[in-house]
Image 1 (cartoon, rainbow, N blue to C red):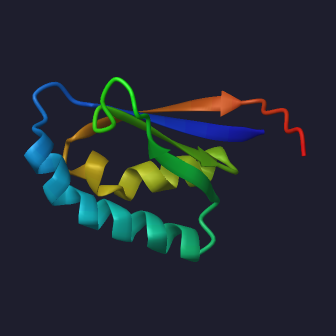
Image 2 (image 1 turned 120 degrees about the vertical axis):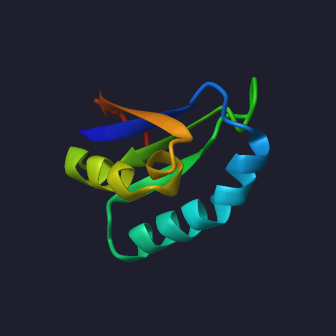
Length: 92
């Protein structure tokens, strides 16, 4: 079982503010991953607007919730997260 975190930008969030916070968000997810935080993948959706929504995949709900709790996009009020349990089937 994996867990998907979907981010949606809060209404009224300006793109300039998102770009201002992005370097802190990037440093945060890189450190989270390096520390073994269970982050498998993340990134924005390309349509309709890559700044409007994104997702991350985590190996546990605890990791997903821990990530959300300190992510600058969330703590600075730019994005609303949603955690979904994903019963993934892999074809490797």
